[in-house]
Image 1 (tube, rainbow, N blue to C red):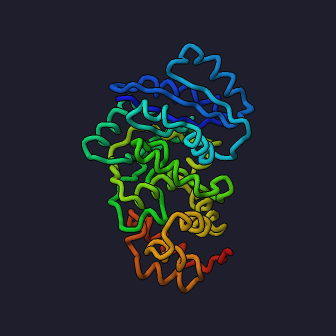
Image 2 (cartoon, rainbow, N blue to C red; image 1 turned 90 degrees about the horizontal axis):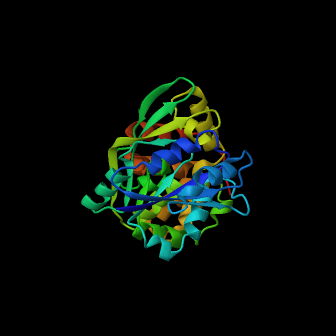
Length: 308
């Protein structure tokens, strides 16, 4: 089983070696790593070149000529730049963050499930690893899929994603249809899940966890997965600043104009009353977790600014 891991790096010198080493020691698979550094200024790139120069047959290190501005943009620029000849060398493609640690069987188990379940996208639960409190807890993502869940949430953290070549080619095709660089709050993991679902591809959601998902003071997105007052405040801030509006405005461009999904987006973003209608009409078919669905309903019912 040959798997290519696409790793996005930026100022990750403190943790990146642990992550890369955990990928290189994956069991039961042949793994290659393409590292895309987003113009780090902390010595990350120099460290990688020095530390892994002897692994040139297994690791490719590339520096972006211009910063993409976010990990999501970095991942998608990477996918855009990987040509078909390289993709065809592998059975599956995976995303990796720079600061986690993978358990030795992560990629093997993902590949096996993609094969046995005839799926095109795999993702899983994670183990939240809080560096400050030195605690570990489960982040559950293995909720049952709902009819329209992909319209308002992604699958799991992108670092759990493993994809077939079929899905990778679709993502490359669709990403060329949007201006993801200027898409406010762009989320690569949500985008991949959206493409898989709207193309009726099978998704396998694993209730196991194979990643130590490291939370630390410079991990902005990781902090949002913690159960803290800070996380609640930051999530609320995102909603107030138009999180769902900008996601809806981006995704609707990828849908047929008269599709049911496009109509849901249009009504959700039109005004307060049409947004309430969508919540009442589709209720628990919009979010996988019932608890998160209730939070979504409450936040959506707030008299938020209508963006144009």
